Length: 102
Image (cartoon, rainbow, N blue to C red; front, side, top):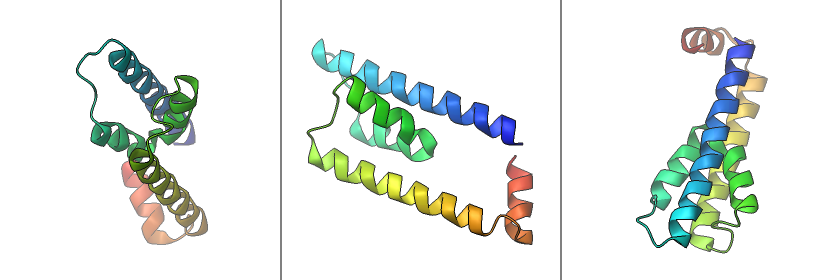
């Protein structure tokens, strides 16, 4: 389970990183862009680390506060989610859900 989650996490964050880079390329070339909503949605599904790297390496969306505050809320949500999972990881119901998912 842990190995599968690790690979899944790496894949999701790598894709998020590449999507942020692709959106930056689209912006530079005056092409139709990936919507902010889609960038945030990808980050929400545990791609925030890739999003952070993409934002800073490609210098993309780092000065747009309307995007940043939503992105920060996603990170806070994910931190709370992981803390919740860590605290209740031995709880029967949580364990059952995790076994079904992974």
